[in-house]
Image (cartoon, rainbow, N blue to C red; front, side, top):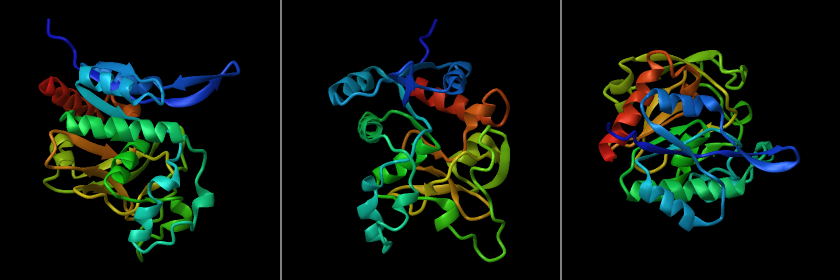
Length: 253
């Protein structure tokens, strides 16, 4: 029997019984298993050589959701785009600098090795800033919908229920996977991509103009989505996203 592709999944930091612990919502792992992959939850460590060894053994990388990203990681990019870098930083929530560093190292290493990469919510944002992109510190405060566009509260439902639709760009990698031009998604975030990083294209847009998915067409599989497809990974069309990701990881193997 063929081995399942081994897919690294990043974790959040939390506290359990007074001790620091790693946390990964089970629906991330379930989505990978259901699609035929073998998820491995990564620890958080300052030892980059540990991550290098994980990457050498892995077939793919999934960057998951979680806490806000430290603004210092994209402050200079904001300044290059003509934005007052410190404006709105007080609106950034709790950050985990150790996780930021770990995921940026993992992302770079995965790209160098040609591994398929899937970013979810925060994961998509990490992918973007790694290539010089920027974020809105807080959508409600910093993003104004175009005249006549529908205003969306992107963190109105934090329980995973469907919130709004997104328009999927024609002939994008994402459209090819999902087979849809419009998709109903959940929305559990207050930050989002502002300026695209180098090499990325926006493949899904919310009715208020917020970028909801990014991809690199020149990569074997490098896709980030702002919503949380793992909540609906047992149903179509969300299942297709994980199926295609795991398939790409198997091919990379």
